[in-house]
Image 1 (cartoon, rainbow, N blue to C red):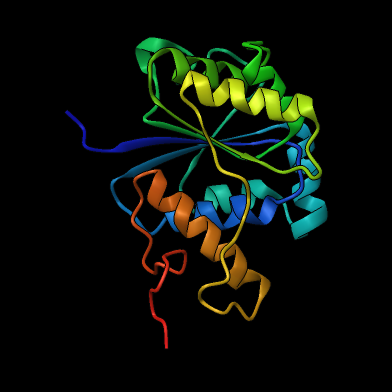
Image 2: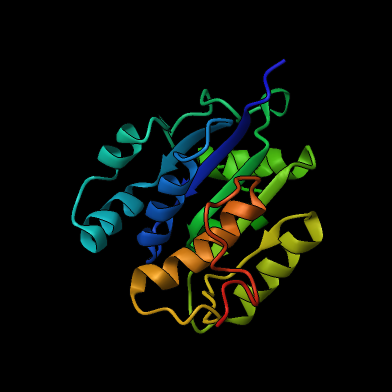
Length: 194
């Protein structure tokens, strides 16, 4: 029996590709993680716009697998092959609505459906502001179904000096939540305080 932790990272078409970039890099520091990444087409476009390079370069460089979003033949689309964790980072409100509504119209929403029905970890990182009542109701529905809603809210405990410092404080929290032990705990209250 393998001790590898199976994590699927779903990247959807919302601003915040830098969070996904840092999460992928954080996972590569660990040996007991198997990371698979699924990108929507809009996520690719936003990644290129925000980060200036093809996301597949980083995914391949880090040894993660790239899964197609347009096929239910992808691993983890069946309850008999559920992942330990699905992290949707960032999560657009359209993707969140499809997941909340059980509309398994692509691999990300199907894997989310599997995670919920199999009582496996599903973490959604919504990227939208302000939030409408529909957004909030969809998040409430997902929380009631067992998902964790984790808005992209970096901490300021560690006195961040750069955007990367802010991103790393939030991504460190996500790494910890998904069973990956980050090397630094910038997200932790009262850690490395003067």
